[in-house]
Amino acid sequence: MENGSSSTGDAELDRAVSQWLRYDENPKTASMVQDLVRDGAIEALKKCFSSRMEFGTAGLRAAMGPGTSCMNDLTIIQTTQGFCRYLEESFDDFKDRGVVIGYDARAHPPSGGRSKRFASLAAAVFISRGVPVHLFSDITPTPFVPFTVSHMRLCAGIMVTASHNPKQDNGYKVYWENGAQIVSPHDKGIAKAIEENLEPWPESWSAEEALKSLLLKDPYKDIHTQYFKAIQKHCHHRDINKRSEVKIVHTSVHGVGHTFVQSAFNAFDLHPPYAVEEQKDPDPEFPTVKYPNPEEGEGVLTLSFALAEKEGATVVLANDPDADRLAIAEKQESGQWRVFSGNELGALLGWWMFRCWKAQNSDAAGVKNLYMLASTVSSKILRAIALKEGFHFEETLTGFKWMGNRARELLDQGKMVLFAFEEAIGYMCSPSVLDKDGVSAAAIAGEMISYLATKSSSLSQQVTTIYEEYGYHLSKNSYFICHDQDVIRSLFERLRGHGGQKDSYPTECGRFSISAVRDLTTGYDSNQPGNKAVLPTSSSSQMITFTFSNGGVATIRTSGTEPKIKYYTELCAAPGNSDVTHLKKELDDLVVAIVEKFLEPQKNKLQPKPA
Image 1 (cartoon, one colour):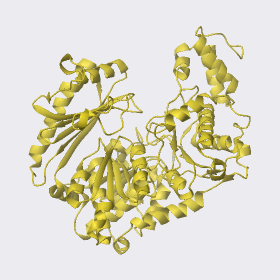
Image 2 (tube, one colour):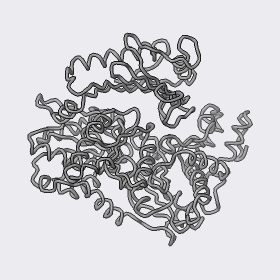
Image 3 (cartoon, helix red, strand yellow):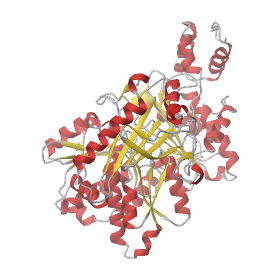
Image 4 (cartoon, rainbow, N blue to C red):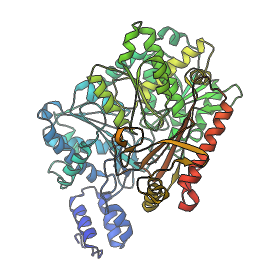
C-alpha cells in the first residue's frame, strides 16, 4: 500500500484505500485514513470503504468523514463528476442552461466537511466542464433550489443538506429540470456515471479558482425577490393579516429558516413572529436539542413554549434545519400545548387551500381541474374532502420526489395542483416549488391562524370541524429500530407467505378482518384487476398496506435512510360517526394487534422508538 503503509490482508480493501489516498487532497480525511491503516483498524476501514453511498429517497445522505461510504470532499467531487457527465449526455443545451447549487450551515470540524465547501467543490466540477453555475453566496432553505430550477429553467439543481438528520450527517439532494427530485431511471444512470468518473478531473479540486470564474453567478438576491413575490399569490387576507393580534413564536432549530420565515411573514403583511433567540442563528452543533427534528415534538419545542408563555403567544411554528418542513403547536384552554401531527396539519392546510380557491372561483366547473396529492402512508382526509367537494385526489409513493414529479405531469396537462403533503410534516402549498416547503407553509399557516381568530376559532377547533364535516381520520404512526436485514426480510416474508403458502397474505389480524392487501415490494394489489398494483413497485424496499373492514388502513415499511421498520395506521370514519372515544379505542386496539401479530417485537428483538 502507498504512503509506506502496510497491507490490511484484504486485497479489495487495500485497493480501495490505496485509490483513496491517491485521489484525496483533503489533509484531514487523508490523515484519518492513514492513521486507521497505521493502527491496523480493519473494521473501521471496512466501515469507511466497504460500500459507496447510494441515491435514496432524498439523494445521498450519510455521516461526514473519510471513505466512500461517507460525505467528504472526494465523494462530493466523484458524485458531481458522475452527475455532470450524466447531464452532458441528457441535455444538448446543458452548457447554455447550467445548474443551481445551494447549501445549509452544516459542518464537521474533524473531517473538514462543510456544506459550503461541498457546494464550492461541486461548482468547481461543473465550471471545469464549461457549465454555468448559479451558486448561492449564502445559506438558503432547501425549497429555494427547486424554485430556482423552475424559475430559471435550468437543467438541474443540487442542495447540500442533511435536513433534520443528526449533526454529523450531510446530504446531496438532486433536482431534475422539471423542478422535482430525481426518480428512476436517473438515479441509476447517475450512479453508473459516478462509478465511471471516480478519478478527480484536473480542476475538480480548484474551488478557489472556480469562485473567480465568469461562469459563476450568484442568484441569491434575484431569487430572494422572486420567491417572495411568487408565494404572495397565496395571500388572500392581507387586511386581516395587518390587523391580526395573534402572537406567534417561530424557531428555526439552529438551521437556516429564521431570515426567510421573517421575510415570508412580511410578504403576507403578517406581524413578525417572535424568534427563539437561542435557536434562531445557524449552528451546526445544534446545542439545545437532542435531535434537530421538529417531528420529534415537544423536546425540540421546549424553548419555543417558554418564549410563548413569556410573550403571551398561542401558536408555535417550527422548521427543521433546512426549512423544508413545518411543525405547529397551539396552546389549549387547559394551558397544555398541543403539537399537531403531520396528518392533522395536512387536513388544516388542505382545507384552507381549497377554501381560499373556492372563495376566488365562482365557476363550479373549475373544481374538476383541481388536484391534491398525498403520499400513500399519509392520512386519507384529502380523499374524503375531494369526494365531497368534487376535486381530484391522488396518492403517490412515499417521498416528495413522487409527489413533485406527479405534480409536474399534472401541471403540464393544464391541471391545477393546489396542495400536496406527507405525514412527515412536509407541505407543498405552491406549484412554484415542486417539493415540500416550510417557508411558504409557515406564512400560509400564519394567515389561516389570523383568519380563524376573526371567527373566534383556533386550529384545534378547526381540525374538529373538518373531521365532523368530512369524517374523522385518526392516525397513529411509530417505528421500531432493527439493524438486522435478515430479521427484516423474514418478518416481511412471513406476511407474504401466510400459513406457509407463497403469495398468501393474512385475512385477519387479531379480531380485525382484512379486506384488501397491497404489496409495493412485489407489485401485488388485491383491489386491482389481475392483482397488479397501479403505483410503482420497488423490490429493494419493503412496503405492505392492509385495509381493514372497519375503515382501518395500516402500512408497514422499511425506511430508506434509517434502520427502522415504520408503521402507519389510520381509522377513517364516515361523516356523522363522531364517537371519538370509541374510534380512538378501536384504533388503539388495531395498533396493538398489528404490533403483536405482524411485527412480533419480542421474537424479532425489535427496539421500540425511544421515549
